[in-house]
Amino acid sequence: MKANIYPWQTEIWQNWQLLLRQERLCHAVLFTAPKGNGRLALAAMLAKTLLCENSVTEPCSICHSCQLFEAETHPDFHVIKPETEGKKISVDAVRTVNKYAWETSHLGGRCIILIQNADSMGEAAANAVLKTLEEPPLNCYFILFTASIDHMLTTVVSRCDKWHLKLPHESVVKCWVESELFESVPLQVIRINRGAPLAAKAFVERGSLALHEELITEFSAYVALKQNLFIVTKKLIKSGSDALQWLSFLLLDVMKLQLGTTEGIVHSDSMILVEQISYSVSFTLVMRQLTALNRLKNDLIKNSGLNHELMLSRWLSDFQ
Image 1: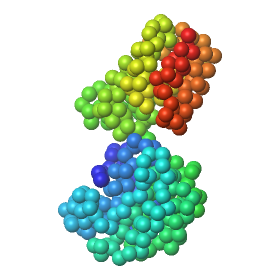
Image 2 (image 1 turned 90 degrees about the horizontal axis):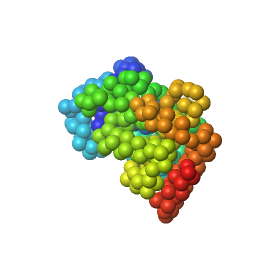
Image 3 (image 1 turned 180 degrees about the vertical axis):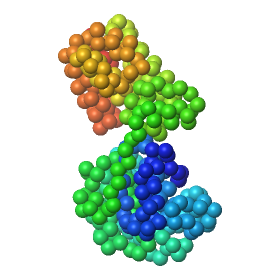
Image 4 (image 1 turned 180 degrees about the horizontal axis):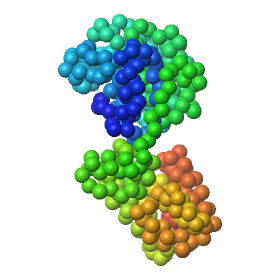
């Protein structure tokens, strides 16, 4: 598990280091951070530091504990997370790590329990964690992270020291992504990925930049110039599950332009296409199609047995 600090995490990490130095770090640390913000790496850095045999405020990376952590074989580091994205964390998984929390550390030091996507704990799982948080074992630390605490059990939240990791300004994100990839990146890549640095970097690395540009170009040509529906449908299928979200952003941009504003435009590097669509279809039609698109996205997620190509073609044909 990668343990490091990204530039935008410096402030929260320095605060944690101060608490570690003063021996005032809470037994349960809960931080909120958007997906794609490096939150797992930050949590791993704190866990590795707490387990380190030589240092108090940062891992030495040379002790036996640090080496085991880097090899992902540390016997006193336990992780709970959903088995698959969108699933709940099971109560059995929580009960298992609760047992570890009360056992003697294998290396004679601390025990760390990391709960990823803590908001995915069901009520039974959350109550199982709560029992341990209310009477924490000696030398056992819980680290929890989530995108939002709104869906977490309030009593669990109240037992934790809460922190919030904000996204950096989009100009900082753009600069960081470009420095990592050694290439220029359009600002709209950052906005498509909601300002999340790691998500924007991965977007370029997996080739989504080219797919996105191809899709919105073909979509604009279809809507504005009435070109081949079949081509756009195939582009949507090829672009994968993110494609409908890209079109949602694009249609929102069209609506904003039709309302006379460019504030908050996602496709800032593709304004020619946004303008082309906005001049070709009415505001009412765009709004109706955007509503239908969001409904279509939900239907396709909930029912994998649906004929994607047929449903996408039907939605596209309504622009005519």
